[in-house]
Image (cartoon, rainbow over all chains, first blue to last red):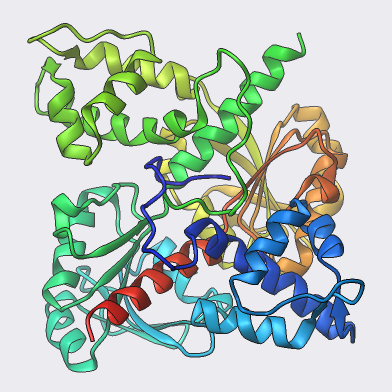
Length: 227
Length: 227
């Protein structure tokens, strides 16, 4: 349940798959890939639910959204279900992205090979620090911020990843939007809103502070409950 | 709204501050600190709501949970509100933590100075790779996994941060729990559940894959809506 921005769940577009379902899809995918490599062809809803600590009814509803139907006493075909989830998540094709902020966090994200498996291909990084410009980080070139907008438009990049400190986040977001970027994945501690970049830009704020706040709060409650 | 695990919101302990409110608190804090450094003494609910793109009624409810009350036509006292939020979030004291996995992501998190400002102090890192053991990363020592459990018990560490690959996450979690750790902040792609570590352990899964899945899905819907 960690809701990393603290905003309420978005209104969903009618007939679209609900976002909570989308959020659970990567866990289903990971689990099914494990079964696949163990050579399993079919899996029951109950088994998936138990392994992922979810309710069976929830699993059945979620998986129905992919168009793959389980059969009573037989279950779901593992290969077909993996393919259906990859289609739903867009993992069957890569989305190219630019990253702004080639510091510690940016470097870690550039080196996080797992992103390529889940559809994100960061093709260039940008930084205001001239000492970083010109370097390669995990095979991705670091370029000067001035080049961002032109290059983004030329390459038709639609996704921007922000890994700068809070005080630089708004400028980074605006630079991305000037380049025609339509969606921002924001790792900076500043929660970006439509006020910063316009209402049309899709924003996913990954607020680590919110996640940590809940963890520490829950820990405090445990302590209080066990004097 | 990004809910990074895709599970349903936890049941709240009665009389506790709701988790969605806790998740919004870091954003209020960041905004108020900005006002404070601009020398502002009072701020209205409406202004906070506008700046953070929230509903005023939501802001009023959230801030009431801190025990600080706004006065009509005058607003909230900025300094007092900051202090009240820090108390609610436990940011007025540090929680010491151990980190498992001193690779790219682990190093980035060790170098992320912002965590210290929000109550987390990572005092040691652990890794199975002997080439990493013995090093210092951002002034934090990297130690051998075998030392974790004993040291955690001796230092009464309660929080563990996991930054290992998916296939190593369960082992890392179990090692932390053997050391008496009560809460796990999990950055690995494997969503940990009570099945891995026991129902008593508090788990916050930061599922970047879920967050990215929603971003890419929303982008796809925009494209579909604008043929």
